[in-house]
Each structure stands twice: as C-alpha cells, then as structure tokens.
Image (tube, rainbow, N blue to C red; front, top):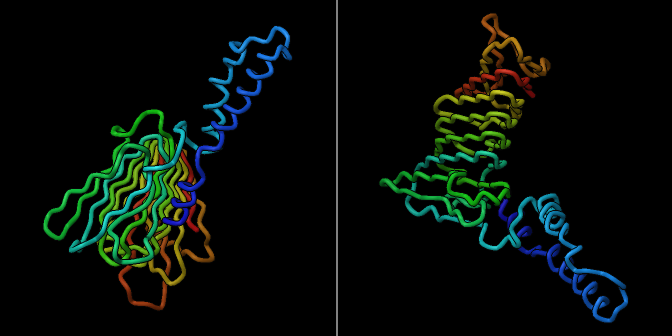
Length: 264
C-alpha cells in the first residue's frame, strides 16, 4: 500500500500544465492574427471540462498529490482503535509489511488522522467532515499486523474494501448506506464482526484454513449467494467453514436490507 501511495505522489499534476500550454498556443496565434476573430473568452467551457477530466483521471479536483500520505510510528502501542467515517469517499484497508509503524497510507488532502494515546492503546480518528468538500481521493490505510485492532468503519455512498487477512482483530463494525462492502476474513478475531448495508452489496471472502461462522439476517429484498463447495449450512441458518485447525472461529454477523450477500 505504501508503494502505491508513493507512486501516486510521484505522478504530479500533468493535466493542468497541458491545458495551460494549449491555451497559451491559442493566445499566441491570436496575437499574430492567425485565428481571425478568435476571442479567449470563448474558452470558458474549459473551466468545466478540465476539473471533470481531473476527477476522471486522478479522482480529485486538487492539483497535486503531495501531502496526502501519512505514517505514524508504533512506539509502545500494544493495541489500537480505528474510527473512520468516510462519507462519500471510498475506503481501502490492509496490513502493513513491517512492525515498526502503527498505521500508514493515503488520506484526503489537508486532513491528517487524529491520534489519541491512552497508555499503550492508540485511538485513531478519520472523519469526512474534516475533509475539504472538493477532495474526493480515496483513503488507503495500512495497519500494524502484530497487535489487536478494534475497527469502526462507516460510509454513506463510499465503498469499503478491507483485506483483514493479515490483521489480528479484536472486534469490528462495518456500516454503509449505498456503498458496497468487500471483506476478507482475518485468521482470528477475539470478538464479533458486524457488517451492515442498506442498499450496497456485501461480499465476504474466507481464506483457506480459516474457521468462520457467518450468520446472515434474513431480509425479503436481499439474497444470499454462497459457495456451497466451501461453506456448510446448519439447521439454524448459520454458514460455516470447517478446518483441521482448532483455532477459535471468526464470528461474523451480516445484515443487508436490499443488497445481496456473497460468501466466497
């Protein structure tokens, strides 16, 4: 995740300089009377076209990517809580490669994550309300893999893609409005994992040799699509995966009001 963020940071704002060069060429030709009755005011639609292209190509109206990466060293922290309310921003989470950092990744411009330390426990806050309205860049977060985490993740229309396969999870609450959820199960979870969505699709991926127990709330407008070659269905409607290991099973509770649920 870090290398991906660094790559984005090195790209630089290419679109805007190209537009400036094109406008400059038009003005130069106009000064030499090569464009007839050309009026520079006729280029005003570029004020709409350029920001639109910037959003399509780079995902943000801002001119550059500098200042959007972050990293917090772990120090003496032994456990953490991550509270992210992303609103309409997409959210991607995963595990960091090294143990020396607590959390790192990419966040929307001008909004560093807020860190509150309580002894050996760290509480990290990232809220959309503190982010400039014009910044739509996705948030990418990597977490320390060798300590227990408690997560609270929420979006309105943003999507959540969380690969927790390298994370030690205490407990988690994932909630979306219109956004989809993709969740890769962790190898172990001390507490429960709750995943809720109003209109979005929920996809749960269970890695091999991961004991998991999934209880899906039955809804009239929501369907369950499970890979029955991997999952078993108990008499009380619980989907589970059996393994040869005696690890504590990961307990997941899913509630999708309209969107479908996929168990992979």
